Length: 467
Length: 75
Image (cartoon, rainbow over all chains, first blue to last red):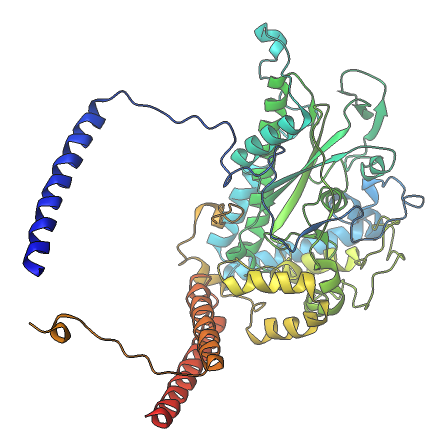
């Protein structure tokens, strides 16, 4: 019986081998065919608007987890922000000169002492990143791409979800990590600066085409969609905060965002619509507020957005368009709730600039905060002063110690995020475990130069569903 | 040629249903912590990796000891 079985098997095998070979031969001479799929591949796009699939524990909600009193929200004058050019208004030219001198002195001292993270190679890297993002930022864009009119073809037409999808796909291709859309109404218009960081007034007018004068930037009423996007920072670099190595990933993200802005402005122009960008670094509108409204993340204790996908390891940017797009809703993934018991960023902040309050408050810390939302307001002056006086670079410790700043390779961490969303009683325990596993500890700056890092130091496949 | 020589025979000890569930949980935890240990190495989180490896070792030893005790009782 065994012998018979063996013989049959061999014959069958030969038959199969013959058939396979002839099939392969026929197949190779057949004209190539390509399967056409009507629906987009489920692994890439999951709904018409091109939204990526989020885990079950991220819920869409009607109101963001940060409470807002729209009656008391006023349009913010970007010049009163303590970051960038606004700092001088609070401390005066003399103090800025003093701090600048200290920062320059520290830089030179550390260079000479070859302090890890501040050596010549670190500073040269940081300076190189800054040079790449120092030009071509504008409100109206380059305006070099051919418009449909110039091509002699009609303007692009499609549903709002089609528009959202193609924008998402294009912007992801340009380098954005996540993209969300907010409609500008009487409430959300308050999130657009009244005055831009360079002092130009931002106004809405009943005009067809956006324009800019020496006094103002004009947004047409019909341009009522804000494109909000995140750009990843390298966790491996930021875990070295505060050093020039950590700083350079922030600068790199700004440079990449500028690239994305310019390309998106040109892309939308090519479709026959307008796209208005940030004319200055952090210009146009309040980034965290718009990101919260676009459902890209929740407001954290450190007054920045924490995303479900990348934690706080992103920078946020925005543009305004008249291309109608499907908008997004805010999310609740238990992040802001977790922040109330965690406090890790506030405890580790060397400038004591972050709030240690148990609950968020409506009371702002100073004019650099915009009122009208319930948050853990920061003392921006302390933060900025520490950066110049203590760190000598930007700081970002609050980003690097955040328990959500994980790379998502460990399955358990993704389940823990689900736990945070569903069982807030576990938040205290999870914070303690985060400490025990030493997740927030600063990594060696010198070790960074030995790492085999992916492009830009980031994992660009983190939002791709592999299921 | 006898059938006994032609085939391998696996003998599975009869155990109460709850013990099978416990073994299932043990195996699940082993896989989860092993993955955590390996992934933590990839994430360059050395301390976390070390803790996860420790958990894997303790969990393996616990399973081994439990298996020895149960085996001696069943035999």
